[in-house]
Image (cartoon, rainbow, N blue to C red; front, side, top):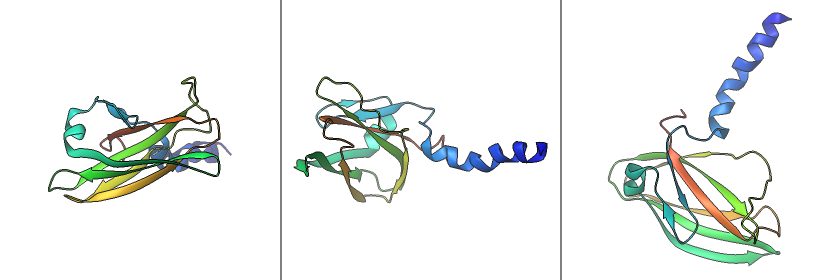
Length: 132
């Protein structure tokens, strides 16, 4: 029985990489302003073509992530939602989505608010160097 209790955390270890925040600095973007924590990532990744809408009573945002360089770019991203007063809406643990864009490539993302109380969002982007 002791062997099984030792092996279970090891079996779950690969899953932890996809849901943990990066250990390094991240960049945050709220649809208008960018907070730069990682200058190299900020120079490589452009956020453009932002569209905001409302569907079925929920806020929806769509934007394009574009790799400005000719070499591939690996990063991870997550989104946080906030109510009208600026308080974070807790809807589960933050999930960091791994992403890879080829040189010059773009990807369109669409994010949907987790509840009707959500009024604003913040995209966080970090290096994937910490998560493999």
